[in-house]
Image (tube, rainbow over the protein chains, first blue to last red):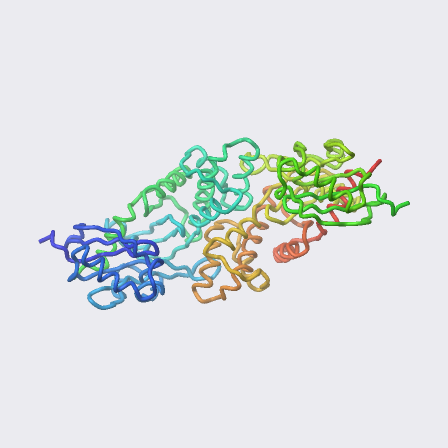
Length: 299
Length: 299
């Protein structure tokens, strides 16, 4: 009976909702995306849209459902209070928030961050538990993971639990500098040579505001084409991130598992490899499905 | 005859033109600002506006004139090619660019910057030479100067010459993050306690993208009011700059001379003092006048 749907799993973020039906072994039977990110919804609108659109379109009216991501924030369906680190899959599975009609929401995670401020995640924890569920070897020892993005996460996993993490707003820095600063350009970041020059310019990751000016100076000085600025900037920001962020979670990176979208993970892989770090890339969507199944599969 | 005007001196930047008439001792006789920054002018318009507005309004029709700043760039009156470092006042005085009618433009400076890219300045060199002219003791030994701003300059002066410098786009990072990122707020950066918390969060200046996220996390986590974000961000960015930029010009900062506007120099003074660095503040306008006079006074 393994090709009968047993659960409706959703990664429900700020911009989009991605839904899957899964069989009793966690395999995908159907998948659909919806432009129903919580940032696009009116307050209180999430349950009605879920029942009116997501359930019927995936033929999942009667199934238990599990949701992760910003749907558990104050912008979403209902607040699923953060769980504190360290936390493993069992800790979160026992704290799922029931919101009726067989729907449960995965709580986010919180830990002590930089400078005493708390750090938080919602959604990445589920992908990490999906990665964890894929291989028993990952559930013992220490592992350093990175989830690139607008707000990238560096995560230390020890003996199957998330011990601590740090958020780096590298993606957002890239976006605001690319759109609004003297470094703005229309060209996409697809020039590997310029990316590598940016990596080299990142140095130890310190004095970033000075290193950033080199992205301007190399063009003004005639050493580079303006179209290469975006790639250079990407290399510089990612290089500075990987040079200095891992030690904030207490781990020198001999090996890093990247979880996320293929294009962005490819850039991080290039940067980490150039720094002599061993890299494994794990697809973010596969991780999300595995994590939702691990947390929410019917007993 | 020391209160007869002998020269018309102008600091002519991207946004504004500030003009003074000076007597034979370099004292200011008259001063006026004009909204004629080169960024606001049509190509080729600078000379006509200068002769039609600046000269008559300062009663300076017959005087020799000296101009510094972006007026010497390709956006300005005529390109005054960069002089290479090391360079002192005599080097620049001999390379003033004559553009007719007794008008001369001060060249900018160029040196090898971060990651092999050239670094450049236009206007700050004149203020530094003004600072230099104010005290014979400044013309020997090594001195570290900082000119805060959108693109802050850290400058090493040795035996009366600018040896090298580094530009840090700290002011621009502050502006784009304050206006366009998740850290945007309308409140001004006038909260000293939050500024000091930002300084503390700057650490060694590395992993800036991670440290920046603490400006968000401290508010989301309920530890701080959103209105204090701007001050915290200012402290964090300036703290990261002073922690790591001085060594890029090769000088650990036991003492720093700040040249610039009083408000911004006040924030840098607070940050440097907290880091145990001795600080002197020198007014940027006084420095510009003294530098223009030192470079351009009639023999």
